[in-house]
Amino acid sequence: MDIIKTENLVYKKTDAMTDKALSYCPGCGHGTAHRIAMEVLEEMGVIQDTIGVAPVGCSVLAYEFMNIDMQQAAHGRAPALATAIKRLWPSKYVFTYQGDGDLAAIGTAETIHACNRGENIVIIFINNGIYGMTGGQMAPTTLPNMKSSTSPYGRDEAMMGHPLKITELIAHLPGVHYVTRQAVHKPTEVRRAKKALRKAFEQSYAKKGLCFVEIVSNCNSGWKMTPNQSNIWMEENMFPYYPLGDIKVDGQLVK
Amino acid sequence: MKGNEAMAEAAIRCGADGYFGYPITPQSEVLEYLMVEKPWERTGMVVLQAESEVASINMIYGGASTGKKVLTSSSSPGISLMQEGISYLAGAELPCLIINVVRGGPGLGDIQPSQSDYFQSVKGGGHGDYHMYVIAPSSVQESSDFVKKAFEVAFKYRIPAMIQSDGAIGQMMEKVELFPQITRRTDTEVIAECGSWATTGKPTTRERNIITSLDLIPEKLENHNHKLQAKYKEMEANEVIFEEIQCDDAEYLLVAYGTSARVCQKTVQLAREKGIKLGLFRLITLWPFPKKRIEELALTKKGFMAVEMSEGQMVEDVMLNVKGKAPVEFFGRSGGIIPNPTEVLNAFEQKFRR
Image 1 (cartoon, helix red, strand yellow):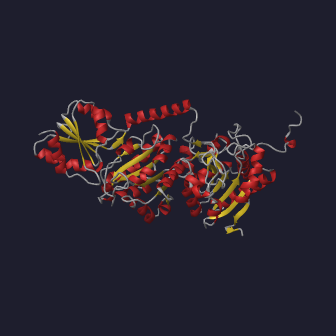
Image 2 (cartoon, rainbow over the protein chains, first blue to last red; image 1 turned 90 degrees about the horizontal axis):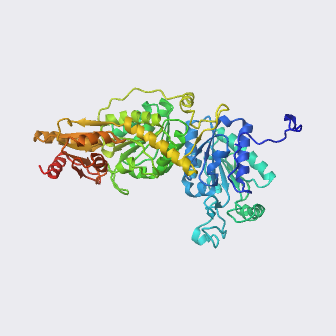
Image 3 (spheres, chains in turn brown, cyan; image 1 turned 120 degrees about the vertical axis):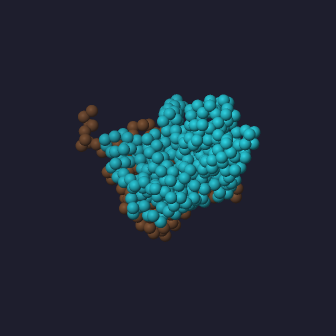
């Protein structure tokens, strides 16, 4: 076709993503989060200096889609892997990509201590308030009264504890330089999230400390909703509990 | 110097890139020695005190995945915590060194020397079909030498290696001849050596490297298991190390390793003074196990007695390979107690009714 010429090209899938079909449910935010992270690295021209760490959870196969050198960690341990990689290869960009169960339940110790040591890495935290891969069980970030397969009558806070605001928690640690909460369900939010990721990669690389980007996302399958319903539900229920925006900038908490 | 210190110094000298560990008695001297020695100034080696043994072993996984030479050390309860990580390391075929300075168990047990982690070291410990290279020093000299040896084997076969020491050898002070400093590899050298598989950053000239132990397709995972088993077979053929002490003319053999082998050496001497033709078969690699040699010896010896600081673990492998061709007895002390040479001899005489 005549129209396919370099000068007419306005958008192209980044080479930092493979051509493999995503394993995520249609409507899920993971695909977008993957893409913008990879676009940032490609735009920065640092693909060959990047090592990523995939978690256990829906994004366990992230290395199938991200066209970079990657390691797959045991459940919750990605920040420990990233710590060693960055200490042994200080000239590399190192990041983890983790869900809420991985980062805020089983991996809480590794998350907090990597943050506290101020490792110069980026943590990308996808919070959808549920265990997606294992079929919709209650996560540490599941909202009060929210139903899941292990809280079928809703999360009873007296019995099951409270949703963990781990992002606010780690923001208080001096080793953490930049903390922000973003979303990827609308074009405006995608653009904001991408800017945040770029800032995180640049500032961690500049040895300013750990940079933490939470992305509040949907799980239409786990929440038993259509993709659109889930995005509306996310805006109405998740965002009030997990408000979007910067939490810590340049090492200072945002008031 | 102490056995623990000798291993720490050997790690620096063999050009290790990183140590990640968590304090636990009786091995904390490894981390303490490294922190005093500042290897980051001597060779550029990274040393980090982790928040737990779980974090330590996963730091090892992260570091080993990049082709760097990394090690950790711990003692029994800490090693139990590392088992999941060790299984991942074996599954992903990552070279590394794990030092276990064994103490009494089960549970929190005590802090005295023991050999009751044999099963855990050689039979898995973690989940899945895998082995580690396991080598057991019986002196401070060997504690130092085996650090170098274990790394060589680990990188040759891309397999996690373990030094199984114990609280006695770790804490004991002996003279040791240290090997000269080996220059730590540069990043370029690491990429040249391990770039075909390690995650060192994807250049445009190659496909991406992935380190994972996940294979969701059963047939693929089975093939991977077959590949691991073939490697283990090769190691069983080429990497077995043992020592035969006065075995040639012996009628009976003690089988032991590490601290219990030192005790048994004295027992052999006491027995020979009494005219009993006793020898000592000392295991040096616990895995691969000297299957063939034990089977050969079973044809000419009147009996074997395994001596362990446990309630009887290695003895099962001795029995498996003697294959009923000679009687196999066992004597052990546990809970952190080291048997003395006379009680070993008494046990031997009683069991073989001499």
